[in-house]
Structures are given as structure tokens and as C-alpha cells.
Length: 186
Image (cartoon, rainbow, N blue to C red; front, side, top):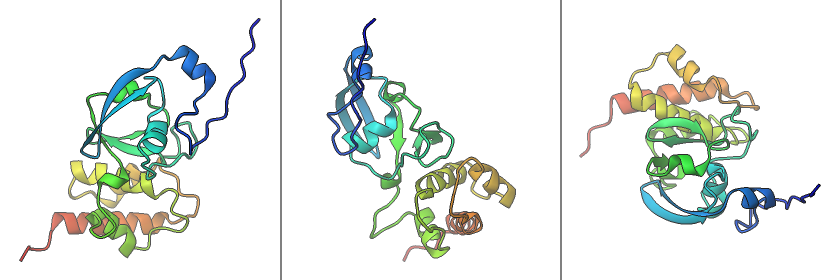
């Protein structure tokens, strides 16, 4: 019987990968479109998308929360659909458009959803915000005028351990109102 030893995955070192994953998943040239930019990476196709985003592309919006696809901290948009990147193999998203929190807006020009979260003070620790904002974006892209119940349903599987759910729902309402009735441009 052959025993294998796992090498710890260090977030700050994208070259360090799990030994068994390398043995079972030979690398392939993977083309990703993330936040409107093309990336060509030589990685195992079964590598979890979250690791590629954070380690290889240095996008830290999506967070590692549970690693099981249950908390929502790792959410990204793939072709407009909110998905959990911590359980999605990167090989499954080749040729699809990936949008992370970094692709929404900038510090100097935040997206209206990001601005609404700031205005509503919808953060304490901020760990859940990536998933909440991404879920709000997916909702508001498909429904410009969601009801409170629709907002709550869109966010129901995104966990906030600080208990700022009321502020988060208020932020999505604010974003809905701004996006439904944009200010005229001068």
C-alpha cells in the first residue's frame, strides 16, 4: 500500500498545490475570461475556481468561507448566474464570462450596488459582502424591481455571521431604486 503525504496549500504561493491533485489532474492550458480580461493559465482543470481567482489571478473579492458551497462568501457571476466558486472546477468555466467583485466597480467609482452597501452601512466584518453584493447583482440584473421577498430569497443562502441582514436588505433596496431610476447625466 502506497501512502501519500499532502502538502499544505499556501494561499500566498500559487505554485504550492495539493500533491494528490497534481498526480490525478495533469495540467492543461486553461483560458479564462475574468472581469473582461483574458487569462491563459497552465493548471489542473479540476482545480477549484476560487483558488485560481485568489492565488493565480490575485482577486481577493471572493472569500474562502466554508469550502462546501454553503455560505456564499466565494460567490462569483458566471454568465450572469451567481455560483459558488469554492466547489466549481475551473475546467467547467472555460469559455464563460466570470465576474468577481473587483469587476463591478473601483474605489473611486463604485458600482451602484457597492455604493448602496456603503450608504446603508451594510457591513460589520465584511466577510460576507462579496457574496451578498454578487447575489444582489445577479438578482437586479434579472429583475429590476424585486420585492422585499424576492430580495430575501436571493440572499437566503448567503450567510452573515454578524447579523447585518436588515442593513443588507436595505442596501439591495437602495441599489434597486438607483438602478431602476438612474439620475440623468449632465
